[in-house]
Image 1 (cartoon, protein in one colour):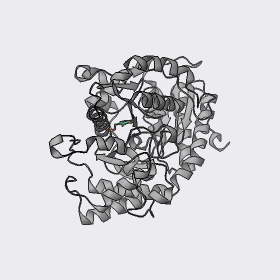
Image 2 (tube, protein in one colour):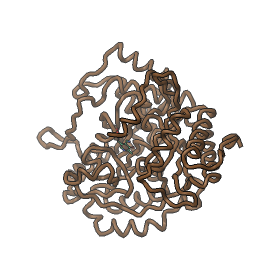
Image 3 (tube, helix red, strand yellow):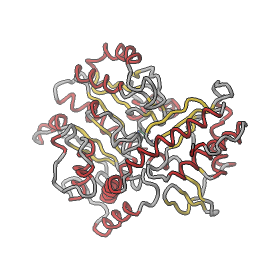
Length: 456
Ligand code: PMP
């Protein structure tokens, strides 16, 4: 808390696109999409209009024993999106009551109001569904090492970051952590589609406990809070095959990686879809809190029964299905399709990753450049590659240097990353890379390297 004494919070008076407006009149680029949620930037007109229309009708009504057309529409469109239907089926012109998700992998949606809670929903559903299909001994969970799933106690338990979890260990339940996970640099990594080597140790950990597991939890492909680390999508195929053989469910926490961040609407590969896909953040383009757990009809039927069977899934967050958040979700889906957001990611994402890679190659104080979709990261190091002393808080110093130069980078320790709104124009992306490079040289020395890098 003492940091705030010599580094007071920025006072925000406005925000538009990738820019934050400060009370002293300065504009700062939001290079991390405000904790990874502002997928369409700030103040998106279409999303705002949807919320305003809804506000004129009603803002929130209990979503138990009531429903409304928008809520149903959002769930159906999300299912079609997650089932890989073409954008015409889930974009702005999608026909209400059109092809529903029931024909694809996912068939049902449960809405909650933030990411951590939705992870808890998925954990509870997995446990209860296992029990109700007769697998009462399946009470355990496994999760990838280095993962992060939120701040509530169940989410901390399946996560693996001591920084956030250590003070609360006495409240947490035991979870088997799967690793080590060798990280990849991105789609050009020769081992991008091959997790064969790491699978040997992971399978050896899983095999003896396979009969006790309710589910395996992971962030698909991108471990965000754990340091913007990428791993091979092939690991997810191997987990899928293992889970199928042993009746274990898979829970994919798509909260950071989903909704287009990695270049596809779900980060999970289409041939390794989970039993539960958890979405939040970009789900409403970061306008309002909302989360969704997408699951299969097979799991849904485990909760079906007369009142007296007590099979229902009882989880009743007040703001489940909040009407304004649902409106934001619909506005976001409209924009993803009508504004060609994924096409923009397909062209600008690789350019962003390449530009940061070039900076890293020219600066001896940066190492391990990596990226996919619209996320690029690099680690600060001592010249020659050795890790820096965390106590020096070099990342924090770069953060402050970058603010002076006009970008909010907010590193994870000594990991610097760019996680901009998906629709950020090329010149703003270039500016973010340039400010990152200049800030690193300002703090750690070295020649200014950025000139023309993004353009070459
Ligand atoms: N899972 C992942 C992968 C996340 O990145 C986050 C948020 N950073 C969460 C869960 C928790 O979401 P929320 O902050 O909405 O609770």
